[in-house]
Amino acid sequence: MSAPLIEFAQVTKSFAGPLTRSRHQVFANVSFTVHEGEIVSLFGPSGCGKSTLLRMFYQLTSWDSGRITYQGTDITSLPKSARREMHRAVQVVFQDPRNAFNPRWLIRRSMAEPLKLFKIVTTNHQTLIGEKLALLGLEDGLLDRRPHQLSGGQLQRLALARCLLVSPRCLLLDEASSMLDLSVQARMMELVKSLRTDEGISVLLISHDRDLVQAMSDRIYSFHDGTLSTDIAHTSDSSK
Image (cartoon, rainbow, N blue to C red):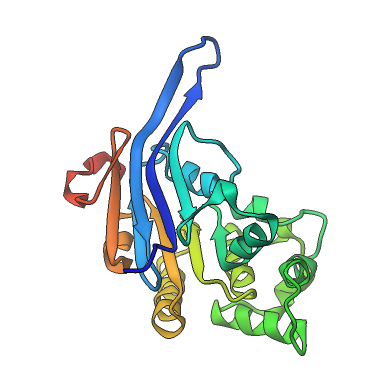
């Protein structure tokens, strides 16, 4: 097989305690892969370190040991141009969508920002944005509002729509449908599966929803007591 699109190899993370020099280990020797065109899920309770792994991939937080690679290359050794391309190709929807939008900007400006940042050439930016909104059941009228005027569920769908504008190869979804009602969540997840089928997009799905990951995933990794297992049956029922 070709090199995985994303690989975490024996990654360990700990945090310093607030009052002592001792460190609290979040997880140890975590290893998993995401290959082209597959949906992989990380399943586990809140606070087990799932979101921390995504932050590591974007080097927003450090790790103690281990290796993280993109297309077989250590992400810490990527030159600037390759790192920029990686950031375009691997798009993320973080857990709290309110932090993903500048509170002072209209949604229209926030949506257009990645097109400018990555120099995406289109005939009409607004037409392309409208098409992505429609995929997620959103109306163009939302573009002339500010983030505080929208619900968390609307912002989650807008965040995903913005990711799709740059034609990513992989989506990292951190509880990306947690604020949606069941019918809208189902529509969003069906869209994600169709993107995998029709466009070969890979997906790393992070969730504490057992039913969701079992319905969506080709492979599931579950967190339990700071370790990662491929057997979801061993995950504590308290994580549901």
